[in-house]
Image 1 (tube, rainbow, N blue to C red):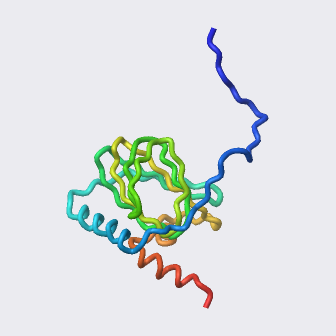
Image 2 (image 1 turned 30 degrees about the vertical axis):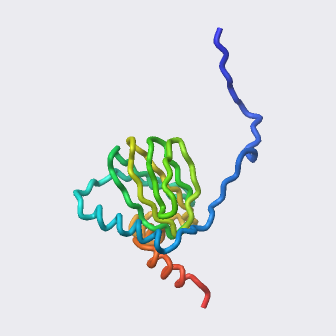
Image 3 (image 1 turned 90 degrees about the vertical axis):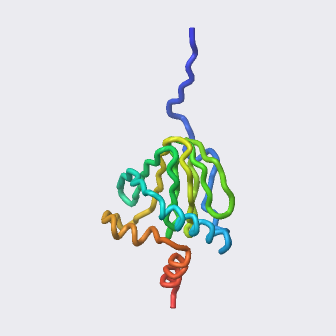
Length: 163
């Protein structure tokens, strides 16, 4: 007779480990390495990854499918988010240190972060953003949530400071 474990109710939803977003601490020389990689791979044949968009009240989730062997450089995040790798293995670098991520993996991602990665296996990666106004226009969301360079991020942050 086999024994199965089951959990039904009675779980305290507030127990468990807590992870919070830590400010991005990568220096300018490290960010330049990611920008240089982006410029170099722009000269190579490009692959258009499948991207899906999901919405719920106050929430936007961007899902990207990355085939094995594809190198990807992401946008600079203008807002903190939670990233979830639901499938695959990804070698990822944010200018600070390179790490190997294997699904399932959930990590907080600080605003100002720009990462590059190589999909070792077919990977599905999600970024989950707060959108309190329930914006659903993808162009407006892209302008609000992403920029290409850290300098654009810093400039955007200055515009949000009280004068």
